[in-house]
Picture 1: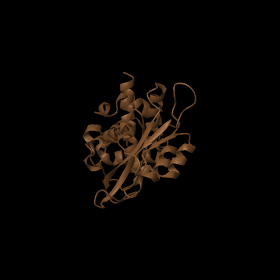
Picture 2: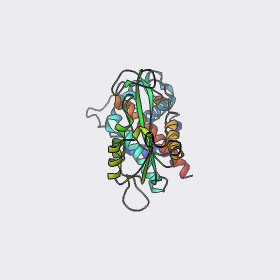
Picture 3: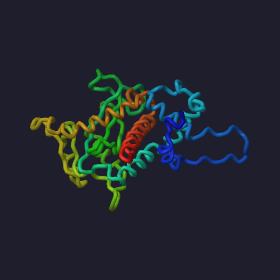
Picture 4: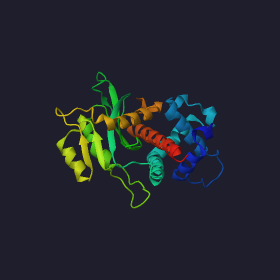
Length: 268
């Protein structure tokens, strides 16, 4: 089962990114759990959507406490974001990232108490969080951020754009800016339009009370499909993590898994 949830090509990319552990000077003690088994357990958890207490430890040969502790350590080290970045580099090198257009959108999910939660205005004020995603023209997630459900979408647009790390391309310097950005009327703010243009990006945002979103839907459906694919990782459907950084980590891992699958399809 370890090879099922952490295949060889996936592990080959992840292994160098995992922080090395110091060796005990006194020696002895219990042998450290295998990193690949822990990674497989975490990948299983994000896709199955189960809680830490329901993690089938017999499948991976590790304890639940070990899996959770290692997840916390790797999250603090930024492993999941780096893993996503490495798969983006590999896609970029083989020209499988289309920089001509980018789309941005968000989706709200229910949440328990914790950081970055708030009353969801479209869910009768129940606590929730939002997942914001910016993807390329082919639906590859370039970056994602989370926030409280009552945070207006427009407030996360510039942080999303600025959070795109430079990605390798077949020739020339790494790239981090799309040619054009598509968004719905929630992002129709004059200051945002100016900030996007200042970054050298063309703006295609539906204007409130002037034009319909239907024409823009020819392109924006791609980011909606990207969000739907991410939510197939059932751990994102409902937020159980009290710490916002843990929920962000699961979102980053889901983006890494989607990018990994796109890479497999592109290199077949």
